[in-house]
Image 1: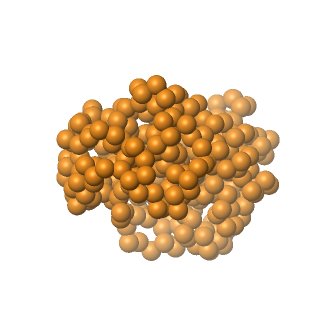
Image 2: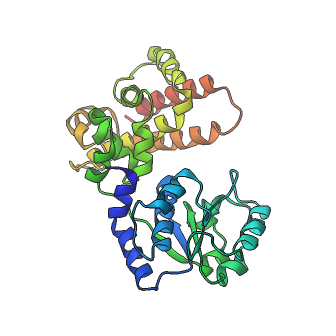
Image 3: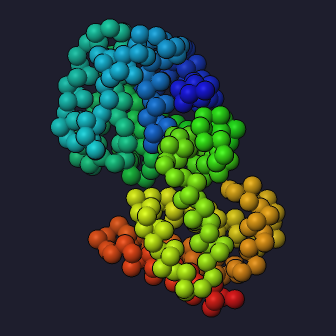
Length: 318
């Protein structure tokens, strides 16, 4: 099963396709999803459904879209974020008649990452699109989208996918349960993790930091290991936070973990070295480390300090 198949079978997608068939679909649509890649692929498939009057099929329109050559499906921004020049081009292009279909679709990816001036430039065209023109916008954080944009679009929040659906897409079957847990229902994120080289080693390192590191003599070794995966530090921090959430559940007396259910027995055995207070304090340490690493800092020193602070918190909060 491919990502396209998963989207095409989803309830969200089929409900919108039904509205297209009944000519009730909005002309300006805002797809909301924390998984930006999933929302973007959803938007692309939906554009084919619009072109085919509510029917999605992998026909010539689909093939041209996948090849980036469809003349009537325009994807923006052309660079990292939407610029004023992009919005001006979109407005101009929206009045140009379609070539191979009876509709023209504009997909604007991550509108929440665009300049405010660029969003303002779209207000009029979103409110009154020319005949046969459809706008599909995506965003990860609705709060970063101008209220005036939000009010002009039909907002659709895309639901998460069941774990079993995500697992079907993954090639790394040995880690499929862990990857699906970390992805939290977001399929594009799961696929990215599935394609991450050394994912298993990265996960095991993260787990080891919280369950096996118990004295300062180990810090240098752990710091070197983390530095070896420097480009994946955000993933390491995310895994650490998920493990802590499950540890917190165990400390409150619950047995049903949210994330790493396959590690229940192991984590239950290890949670004795933590208190609820220490878990909460370490969560704060990780959040602060994420912010610190956004600045030009010495990576090794930041990681060594983090590891030392984790040990100190565990000791002080016993």
